[in-house]
Image (cartoon, rainbow, N blue to C red):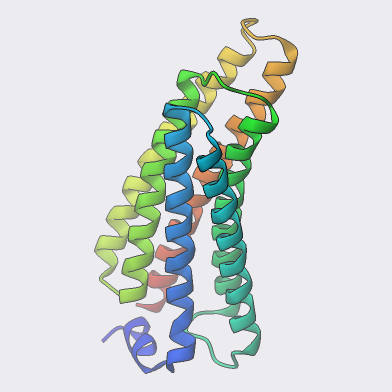
Length: 213
């Protein structure tokens, strides 16, 4: 049996809690990404705004719980640096998505560009794959499945990069006034960073699993 599998089975329940917290954080990211996708397909309603605030609080609470558990754990199922990195990246993914959601209101943006909609769709798919990776990570499944999801996420990241470049070309084409350029650039950047972080988390998980095999 691979060392990673053995270690995960013999860890005490309180230390297995990290995998559950990671999965909770990934689920929050997925919900936030879906919310942003829904908003760009319609508009930012009060109900959507309340959901965004709720997901922001949930993400922050899960991050704090992870750090609290890490600080009181003498032995952990993973390197402490890896646990801290994964927890922080998951927190940042959710934070960036929610920031983009709420900034639509702050910037008084009601007309969403096609690039925004495409970015949102790609991010929602990436967040779903991120949750899948976390479930496999928690179950300690085979490396091949995690690798396959990682490959799919890399393809989404590449697709997202293409959309982001197109969006920036449009922004600086002269079609928008200076203020709208600043607003839209911030939104695009937050979503692009969230998408990149999704892949980075999946890639980190794959590297952890490969090291422990």
